[in-house]
Each structure stands twice: as C-alpha cells, then as structure tokens.
Image 1 (cartoon, rainbow, N blue to C red):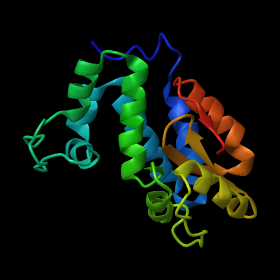
Image 2: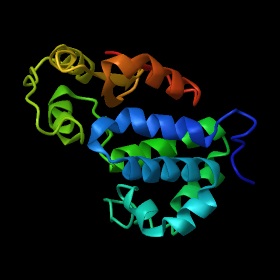
Image 3: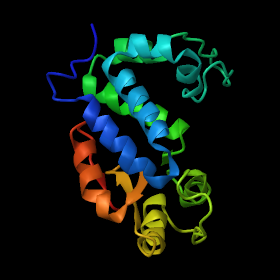
Image 4: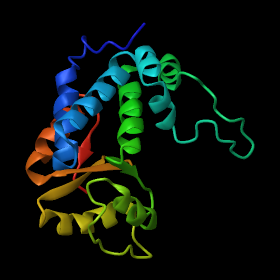
Length: 193
C-alpha cells in the first residue's frame, strides 16, 4: 500500500513549485524538474523511487552502510520503502523523505547548536559564498540563525526553520509565505527564527 497522496491533496505540482522556490536561480529548469520528480516519486511511491533512483536513494541516507559504535550497519536496499513500511503515517514519512533529499541536495540543514549551524549554513547550496556572523559561545542555533537573517534580508533571502525543531532552509524573502504554505500542506510548520 502506497502513501495516500491523493486523499490529502498532495500532488506533483506542490513539489514542482517547492523545487522552484528552494533552488531559485541556482538550478537550471531541467535540474528543478529532476528535483521535483525525485521529491514527488519518493513521497508518492517509495518502492518505485528506490528502484528508479537506486544509487541516489542510498546516498541520501547519511549513515547507510556505515558501522556506528554498538550498532550494526544499515544495509537496507530499499530505504524509502522500508521507512514508509515502518512509519505507516503519511505526513511523518513525507517529512522524512523530503528531509533526506533536500539535505542531500544541500537545500536543508540541521543544527541544534550555534557552532554547528555556523558550519552548516555555509554548506547550504544557496549560501556557500556568503559571509555570516560567527557563533557566540552562549548562543543557540535558533538565535544564531535569527541574527544571520538580518544579513540575508539585505540580499532578499530568509532562513526558515521547522518550528520547535532544528531543520532549516533558505528561500527568497518574497517567497517565504508561499514556501511556508506549501510546507504546511505537508503538516510541517516552518517559521522565521
């Protein structure tokens, strides 16, 4: 049984628009279409996604095949299908799948600490050649990102963060409300820190 995208009014157009808004001018139209297709297929048919994008799907899983202390390595050959099977909740699965892909594409980052956010913000594809404030020793990631939004606003950009969590991404300031609305359709509340 596949995720019930139709029942929740989740369609490919949502991902076409999301890919466009999150990649801006950094991606060609063809690259945007490929990203939208990957996001849509991962969300709508994880089995087919694992088959069509086999190598890609494995690369999006950070610790796939890596031995972690006291744990066996994860060699699941169909990671998206496996996650969907154990999750059983469309929105939790949607958020997980989108996070894996956007993080792999360097369009989303995760940081609990300001020092980590300072490094991660430079790894976001759209922000790699920009200068940011240094993290303060007493600062949390949320505060660090809020301070840097002041710099980004001068360039017409803004960082939005998953409310009460630590996943964040960047978009044009003028597109912020629409990106927040699109993520809201996935029951994912993003806000400006």
